[in-house]
Amino acid sequence: MSVSIYNRQTVGGRRQYFLANKTSTGPFYLRYEKDGKRTWHPAHTSNYTFALAAAKRMEASLLTQEVTPPKPSPKAERTLEEQRTAFLHDKETTFKNDGSKLDGDTIDSYYKVTAEFLALVRRTYAKEVTKQDLKDWLVAQRQRVSHRTVCNLYVSIACFLKFCGIDHKTLLPRSERPVPVEETPEAYTQDEMTKFFFNVIGERDALAFEFLLKTGAREQEMCHLDWTDLNLGTSPTVKIQTKEGFRTKTGKSRVIPLEGTLATKLTAWRVKNPASHLVFGTVNDQPFTHFLEVCKKTAVRAGFDRKNFWLHKFRDTFATWSLRRGVDIRTVQHWLGHASIEMTQRYLAPEQGEYAQRQINQAFSGGLFDSATA
Image: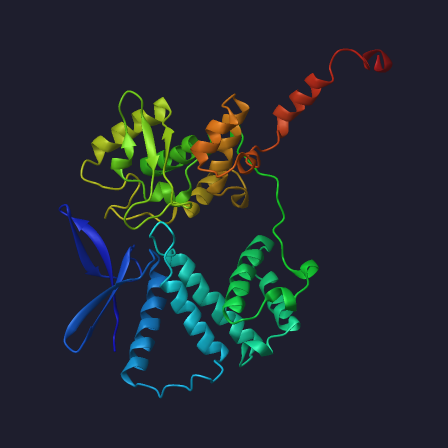
């Protein structure tokens, strides 16, 4: 049975569906016909590659349903593959306490991580998984991704094993489990930002990066920002909130004041785009998903190393600059949407470079050692 991929677009103020290809942008929807009835399913992703994988999984599932297998004995032990199928179904039908489903990218990650885990350990039943299996899997991950990513992947596998009735703590001692290392936050310098924005190509991209820098918004919050979220009046603000097709990280909303120059630019941008729904969307009014690559290419044009530029660093910079320039930490905590002040404190990057040099010189000036070196 064939499953087709469509993407939703807004044409003439109405949402329409078009057959998608690898150049299309989401959100994507899957469609198939069974017994003469057409059925639609959201793909829960704006990435075409993930949507294609979801379509193939659905095709395999539909083919399996056409041939009804004999029901296993209630007492029969489920294999790891059967456990994985049940685990993924559990995640796909999980709703958070605010009524929203798990993010589509999260579901896709569970599909990929569990498949790779089973392919490596080659065990039939969960009870056969050993300590060495986990260690071998960790070695394989460390060869391709960063330590922080390894920690995130391990959490997913621990969650899967728990679903199978296996406590990962009984397999791997605490001293051998991957734990995230709290790294020093990094913020852009004013000189870096001056050179960066001088080299941005395109009004939308320049405005999007300025929005990240001056609001502390997360990437997806910016990409899904709707014009109705903005108040461009005498006291301009932006409301970051959950809406159809998008959920904030915590599910809660927050209001952030807009810096005057940014508000003026957004007002002018609205005049140029009177029919769009998304502030920083594509020409088809869909979320633009390539701002990270645009950021890195801009950094290279400005003469910087691309690995030192990423989108979340704008959020770090917003917090750092705000705190250094006198905004109280409780206010910054609200702007960032943090649950605790301790979390906000981690965003205060230590002084670096010439500014740090001036600070240390000022701290120890006064002539105490001048006579000794004269």
